[in-house]
Image 1: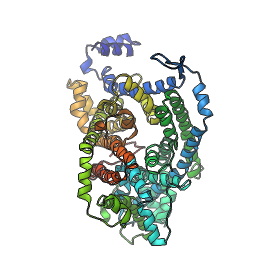
Image 2: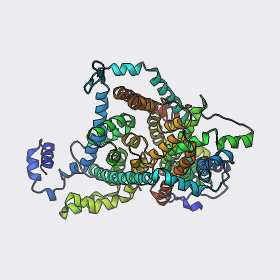
Image 3: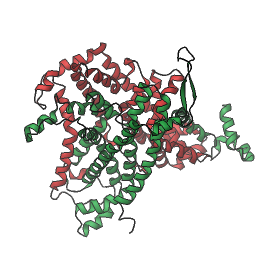
Length: 331
Length: 290
């Protein structure tokens, strides 16, 4: 109780007279002063503990390093000392790390346009008239959202395995194409991106579909009377109107792309080396922190990735604003 | 069938003329793409390891029961531990998360107080902080306070959901009228009782949505429990099946177990998904909720 009171006093320190008056009549006061802090307190405390403290700790760790004393034997032979920016210099010159960044970017360049393109397409079809099986299609395409990405990766990984790939045997039966190596040097990007498309299209489709359903119907009634067909209404009227939702999905997908881990990590186990242990940045960070046991370097890599994500999100925000909806701003 | 799609404004559009063939076909192709791996998985669970390689991929065999038995006997039945753990992490975490989000969302929506804008913006920015930056220090901090490899290590970080708080604020703002709170205040009801008895029931439909999203997010999470836990009997399904797969690369007889486990691990979510269909509203740019 005393902590609450002190918080209360602190917050209204500026107006002592108002505080005095509010206290005895608290229950009947139309503007309670203490309660709002109690309501938001659990969330704020957890937020500080789970987000802010670890974030600060990462920044701190990224400026530290291990120093080995003497021969490195004994209990106090290793200690943590300040490293300045030396971890960051290491990261900037680490070819393997930047290769994993490039791989993630390439993966994103395949995944995001395909996934969001399909999501927009299916959302518009679900919202269009005279289309059959809409309910079935909506449920079926949303279904992979209920499959954990790791489990989805296991399912696809099994389907890619040369020993019992149903894809290869079907292609062989239908078209006579045989022996595609899904873990091959270049195809592996498509193989991993495919898992992301399969798992992510449904969720984004639902986001966009929800946005479409909340649009006022009158807007396209007029176009319909003027003789516009469904395709024109979808592309010229509906698509520009769900622009904020498309931008949101693009930004969230971009953030998710640079941190991709589950799919390639599962594929790393299945593919016999087709996906390396440092295939994506998060896998590199994981290896450096846990396998190579260098928490400090791992922290510096995390910060670099976080900054890259921030830059990319801003870039995506600008691109989506300009290119997809470029025509709209002028009118 | 055609009338099932409601239009909020009540202007019934003219429907039911010809079917548009191309969009319908595209939609069905999409459904085929998403369903085929699940169908393959269903059929694969009926095969032994040798049958997986030798039989036609979409022709079922009769080994489901023996696969199921092998899976449940694996390492003394640890699979059931994984299933129970997933239910504890996802169920417990999502209930706590919905409770914390609802309380905070209500506080943000219904009160004016100093620092409100700052606190809310800070939490929203939290949505954009990549999990990668948090995963490692979270583990180190949890290890420091001696909670590594405990249920709390997975539960506590799962409780806070910036997106849940954001949604709950919108739900509270749109579903709890100020007049009702005012009236309760006039009657001398303490703020917390007004919240529990009056506001919370009004927010419930929205909170089910918050619960569902958090449930799926925790059920699907791999990295957090993978980092936090080291004993096999505390693993959730995702981590457990991964270790099974890991062992499978050197011992391929475990593949059919991983396949059967994969099917069993997605069934609970698919059931949840169908039972609570009307609560799946994914509105990232929500201004109001109907």
